[in-house]
Amino acid sequence: MKRAALFLWLALPVVVYGVYLAWGSPHAIWSYSFTSEGSRYDPFADRTYHSCTYLGWRWHEVTVPARDGRCAWVRFFEVPG
Image (cartoon, rainbow, N blue to C red):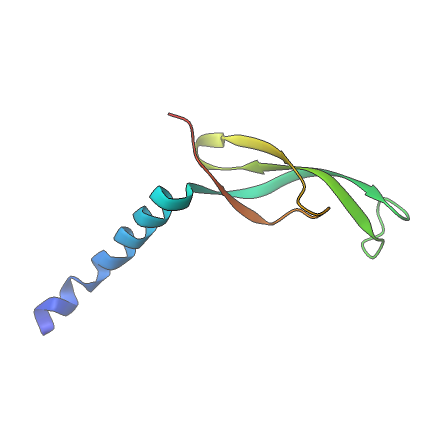
């Protein structure tokens, strides 16, 4: 049992690689365009987002239309070759 515990850490890299194969690599929000119902710099004004730009692995940039007027903080995309 003690020897099996020594190899338990290998589960994390296997899971991360499985997520990469299934959904692609994670990309974080980098920029966006929106229409504001008030002042552009008012954080409490209602906003409708139009496009979201995500930055990921090897500076891979992806611009997509916003889903239901919102941008997610993290999305998964496939990185080309």
